[in-house]
Image 1 (cartoon, rainbow, N blue to C red):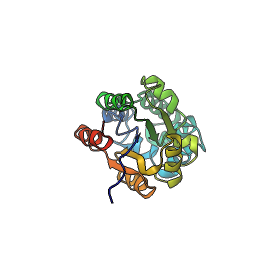
Image 2 (image 1 turned 120 degrees about the horizontal axis):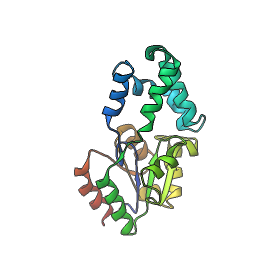
Image 3 (image 1 turned 180 degrees about the vertical axis):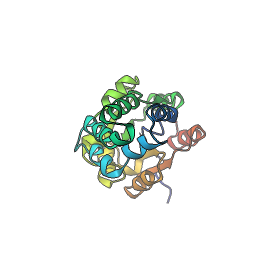
Image 4 (image 1 turned 90 degrees about the horizontal axis):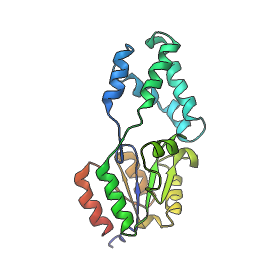
Length: 206
């Protein structure tokens, strides 16, 4: 039996619409005598990351915990805080080709949601990157209290889009998120780059 064509798009943020230049963190690490990759390694430790992605702690608290963990290798708490603050000032870059795709999808009358595991800094990031108003809905894990790939996350996202799961196309660069979306009944595509836009246009038939 053929699957129904998608009538709404749910798009991941980091890795799809927002790109991060790894040189920024690398420059900070070199400046403060830190080992390569340590900022991301510490920040992304699941025991540290999960609470901020589900709204149990604030972005500011999460950043402070990263600085605390870096105090010894950075040469003291003041240097650690300075390093983390410098790293955090960079808020990524918008992939303009993906943003153009989002705008064209919405212009065709297809609702688009931003579906992301994010902290309470998301609204400020969207404003800083000029993305306010570019989506019909924003589904932030830290607001919901549950993160991808939990089925409850995708259920909430589909409700926000006023579209049943079978008619929502989800796009993410992480395989675990794609698998979670499919388990929740959505169509899902793992993002591999701009070459995928042709497929997505066909899937949405616009």
